Image (cartoon, rainbow, N blue to C red; front, side, top):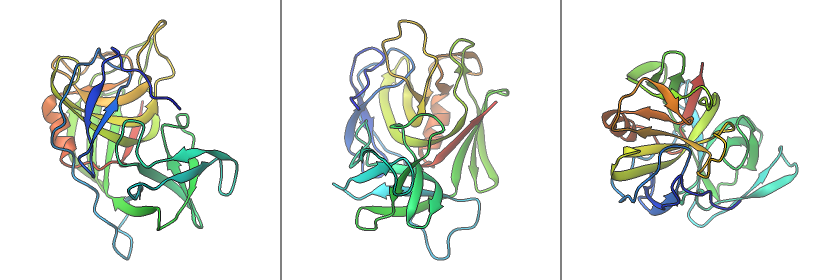
Length: 252
């Protein structure tokens, strides 16, 4: 799959969780401006035996330089090769939603919203982590909530997709951590998700990836092309807690 165009055709610099490398990226949102890499979010902590108490969420992180085969089902049709980095250059971290023996059911932007792909758990190619952090977006209330297990850590008002381009619902995963230098469209930073926007406006030439990004304007409205917008303070707080691969649940 080729890299998607930026919403303005301008390349963005991306700060990467887990490695602090530099990459490129874009999604459905504003016009975009040049950016400079900055502090990345903290990495997930490795799991310990026994597995952390529920609820906790598995993350498969590829080792440097490694690739894995994405399949339609365990041992099924080959879809494509994944890794060693995301589309935007981040170290590849995949949210795990199912497990069948040595196979992991994962979420990836290479597949459609709600589609689970499968990779074989290979310790030589990947590490398995767990995080207790998760994000929950309630579109009817226009609120975003960070949880640690069942405990509510923080909540923030957000702008959601407008009537013609609603924010997609379902379970997704964090794929990239993006930092901007005073962007008029994205504020300080953004968290890119595995989600795609299937209802883009006619003639739209930008990307279709969904993100949670900051804004310098008001929040709590329904006017975006599908992205969730929050304040700079909210995004900085999330950056201090969320690892790549963390789950994001969006519902009406």
